[in-house]
Length: 421
Image 1 (cartoon, rainbow, N blue to C red):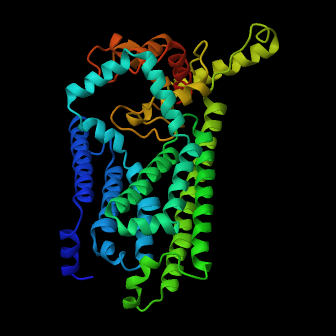
Image 2 (cartoon, rainbow, N blue to C red):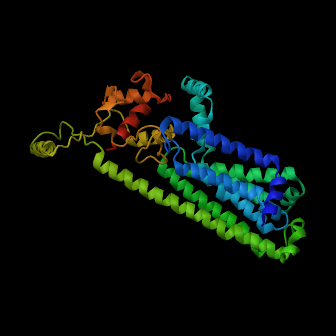
Image 3 (cartoon, one colour):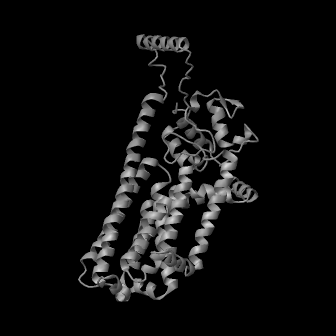
């Protein structure tokens, strides 16, 4: 493909393709610039995330604006490469680029604060939105429309209709990309419990690999071409229509399945790592409460003696590790889920919380050993709960937003945070 072919492809590009890609890229870049001006380069949205998003946009442009788009009018195999980019290559790259953080910071500050104020003072609407989001981003729910889109648009009737009509062709690609973005978002950024999200994501990706592989196998082993309209320009490439179809089926079956397998393996490693992290946290850092009954007699004396020796050794070595703090009525397991559900990881790094790698605010690991909260209040369970519920009551000028966290949820979050050392 020479330079002339690229020029022709760009000249013939549909504005409906070029404008959304350019708008998304500019909006993302503007948001990243705003975050980095506030938090520093590489914070909030990491350099790696920015590169992933840029790569996603570049792959979409390569698939839809390059000479590949021209060749796809003649070769079904080239058309299938476009489809795989839209289904399983560009979407995960875009999702891993933290687009919502960048897009939210691209909003005018007044509009962003107005939206935050509405969110803060509309608990019923907030609950409804959170519930709807959890439902709509359920991996198994978004898997259904994605599977339907893939199979429906590869049936002979709809596929050839898309070949005849530019509008239907755009609708076909829009269905692929839109449903794939929902699927990969639900899989890579699960809402709610982390381990359950990992498990559901693994199963959904494997199920997607199975049904797309089955469709690819049907194309490979078909005895006759499915799409006569697509066969018009195949002879110029030295292929028969059936050979072109078989090549397209192999592209969907083998490379496509391999991508889903890699993503499933990555989620599986995250699933194992998260479990190991939580188990270590529970064994080492969860406070042990001694009831009055158990505190009587020789066992209690041994415990006190061991504790005294440990304190003495710690003081002698200059280490001032604080004892783990218990939060009355708090549940660390629920707290970890609440931290993920309220999106705290978009600004903070929180060990054991999936996707919590934000760098806008300080990392929360080790918060149990800090003496102050926000530099203003002593680090006590009551103050930490109050900080989570309404940070402005402790530091009026803080950039931390009020997310409308209820008292029980804040108590659970504090209980989990105090397990991190």
